[in-house]
Length: 75
Image (cartoon, rainbow, N blue to C red):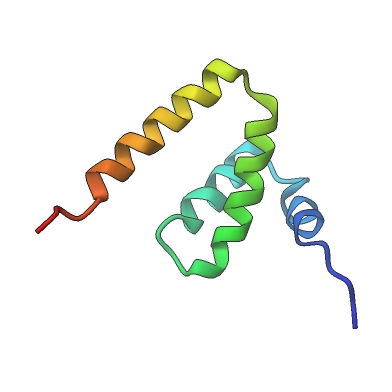
């Protein structure tokens, strides 16, 4: 059995892409099959590790706000 490191496979897969190709990968993954979600997670992790605490806070605020909008209304 092959031991596959998913993170490394994803990074290797997009590591030589141009900025436009990376953008296309992200846009093509959004709203598509759930099998693309791990790739987006790896890309998000790479971003998260490199941004400031202030930028992380802004991302969390934006995500929280969006999740509140999507939450079903209480009955």
